[in-house]
Image 1 (cartoon, rainbow, N blue to C red):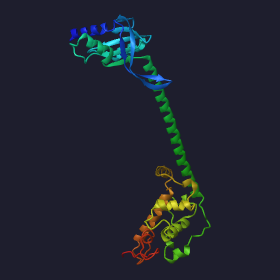
Image 2: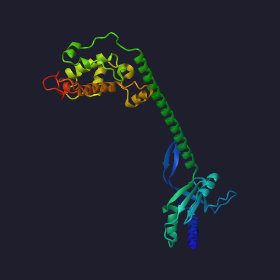
Image 3: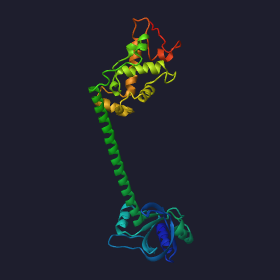
Image 4: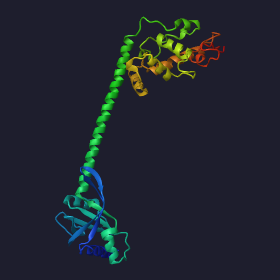
Length: 322
């Protein structure tokens, strides 16, 4: 094997004595400061000498000149350049290419070896200053991108935290300064007539998100959403109801469209807080639970059930089982 490898090396080196054209592999490079992949290139070569050595222990197989630059050529049969050798080439700053002669048959004719060395065999750059510059630019761009992403993430985190803290502060302020000390319950007479007035004015977590006292926005839910069916005949959920209350300007600006994530973090700061949609959901659940647990009354009213599913009219009475 060693003899065959030596013969292949000699044949490969002989291929350069006539200053032939050589195919150089594609490589990473820069074009107007942009990263590009430069295509493979066929170049004229000028044979300088077999094997080159210096004080830095660089001993390439061939030393040629191409495109006006010195070029080292390594011919690899079984032993390929390792990281240590590549580092020495990098320090020397002379471009170097490695040609892989492992695949061609060991009994190939001289003309086949010449063709493989100069054109067809797999080849790669061991070192090229253009590749180094491109990688440095790539690393610098990556670092810049990472720093910019870190800055954006830090800014977004700070903005988010500020939003959470401002929402918590606004809710504490809303609790300290209740709205609507003098108010009128909308359609109170109608609600009293059919026994739903008792569901008005319930304090639920999040009630301070509203621009009116609980009695007002809860009466509007009962009268407009369930009685007037302003949202249609389908079972009403908290979010559509909150959207309706928002259109009525019944939700304070600081608590409009509070996301679930923000709501959770605000609640961690102040357990009394709940977003407007959750306050409505809490209210509807309280009404339903209190009706279902009322075992002593022979006739009860459930806003969530009777007004959604009544068959004899919007103010349907619902009998509960004893």
